[in-house]
Structures are given as C-alpha cells and as structure tokens.
Image (cartoon, rainbow, N blue to C red; front, side, top):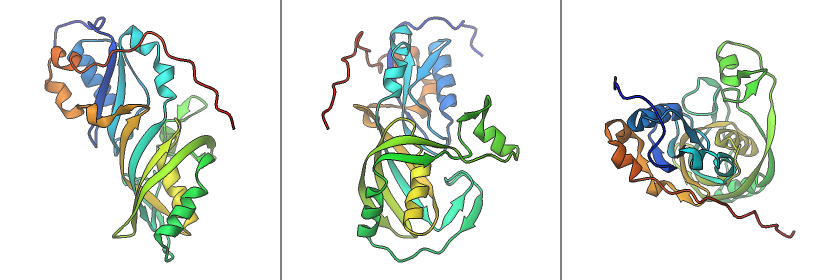
Amino acid sequence: MSSKKFGKPLISGLFLVDKPKDYASHDIIILTRKALHVKKIGHSGTLDPMASGLLLLLVGRDATKQQDYFLKQTKTYDAVLELGRETDTWDAYGEETQTAPIPPFTLQDVQQATQTLTGEVEQPIPFFSAKKIGGERMYDLARNGHEIERRYNTVRILQWSNITLLPNNQIAFTLTCSCGTYVRSMGWMLAQKLGTTGHICALRRTRIGDLDVKDAFDGALIKDSTPGTIYSRFIPVPQSRPEPQAHEN
C-alpha cells in the first residue's frame, strides 16, 4: 500500500473513463483515487457491472461543484435485448425467473413498439437497483428476500435508433434518454410490447451529453498509470455554464 497521503488534486477537471465490463463503477473511482492520491472524486452517474462504456469522473472542486449539471445530461447507450427469458435483474447477470413464447414479429413491429415508448415514459424501477427505500438500497432489500412494492419513475426517451434484428431472438438498439433511465427497464418494456418478456444481455454507454466514449481512457489501465498520465487526459471544466434555452412547443 502506498505511504503517500490522500490530498487535493493537482488539477481539477473531467476524467473520461471507458469502464470495462465486470468492473463496478465504484472500483474505477477507488482505482483513480489511489492513482492520484486524491480523497474525493465525484461522478455523473454509475454503470452496472454488466455494462461497459463512458463513466465521467469529476476531480477537484471546480469539477465537483458542477456535478448536478453533468448528472442531468442526456445519455446514449448501445444495447442488446434477448427475448423470451426474464431475469430478476432484467439483465444477463440475474437469475432466470420466467420464460415466455415469442410471437412472430418484424422490424417494423419493433419500430412501432419503440414509438410508443418515446417521449415521457413511466418506467418500472428494477428491484435490483441503487434506488433507496427507507434509507436502504433496493438491491440490498431484494438480495435479503424482502418483498418490495413495484415503484416507478418518469423519464424522457428521446430516441430509439439503429434497431437491428439479430439471431437467437435478440434485438440490438441505441437508446438516447434522460438521466434516471434504466435501460434494463426499457428493454423489458419493449419485450412486453412485443407480447413476450426479455432481458438486456449487452449494454454499453457511448455518450454523456457531448462527451463521447471514444475519447475515454481505458479503465483497466488506471491501476498501473502514473498521475501524470491520468492528469494529461483531463478535460478542463468551464467556470460557468450557459442557462438552458427555452423551447417553444
């Protein structure tokens, strides 16, 4: 263990990380803290261990004080939905809970179903999620066998795109959505619209606002990186942000 004490960062800025699959977002935060010897690092939304892609870390006071701004940015994901098999987590890491037959459908059927899931959508919150109930996270309650009442939140789905029918009853798509969206929930809802059930079997976040994963640092390399290497990848944070413009209906 390093004998260096944790302190203030040398530079404040945004650190874009491409989180590998099977890493928890908190693992990436801890690795970055140790690499930079920095005590506190913020983020703009975590990813499930099954998911890969863009994780935005906020280092230093100038960055962390704008955390709310980055949390509210739209996010874009590439996902694959497997039909016919539901899991308790609505993703590939969960335990199978039920299966259902898959009615015949076409690409046009899928596109029409996604149109009904665009705009303001009330989505069910997965039982295995970090949402808190009475101070406890839902995934802790679920893992301990507590019965949980289904809860919902309203999100905005801006666009479904790149919809592709794949072998083995799978559908690939790109989803652009507001903060607070569970792609697992949207995948399950799409399966329901098609008359069956399903779960997300692949998920990758590609964008947060204008920030793209192609500009991100490989999260698997953080552990063996020097502070200078990581600081060289920081994006400066502007000191002020323009007020959102009103849109006419």
